Length: 202
Ligand code: URA
Image (cartoon, rainbow, N blue to C red; front, side, top):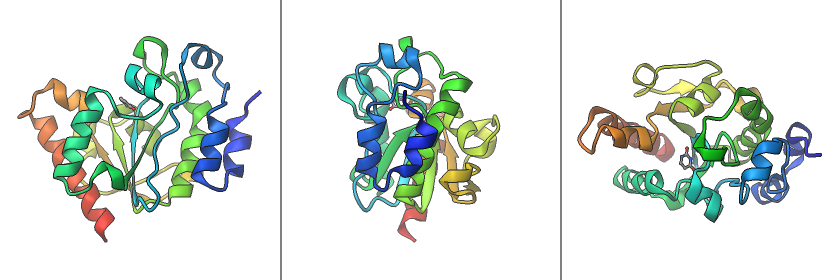
């Protein structure tokens, strides 16, 4: 029986955490349906951590976060912001793909939270960027409208991940793409990733 709340705090490095999290079966439905656990990527030295919602089909296949269509867009926008993906740690609120890409449940998020909280503590980033409503609600501890929360530096409200850490909330790339390349959400996402890059350069 995996207990993320007991195991995660004991991991002393990202690779150590990854080795344990990969075997997590705390959510039986997710553990049965997944191909693999998508722990996240951490290029050593990364000073920014981006957080999405949960792996999709491509991520479940490859074991790497944000490698599907939303990931391609994210890579492009990060490069434009002067913060290439190779210098950013990336993870999700949930480490396993919810069947059919359904929304994570509140219970799944609660069970998975110790992994992400520990990842934040281990990366010790200068800024955490959260992509979309699920990650924003996780980071702030309440539901927010992205349009209202984005565009400025807030504070992370997750206790064991470091309360008060600089936080930037923005649109999920997949949501921004729905409004088109020249839509408002895409412009906002570009701007917010530039803010993340700026905070990382300090
Ligand atoms: N969407 C997410 O939120 N995370 C991924 O890793 C891929 C798509």
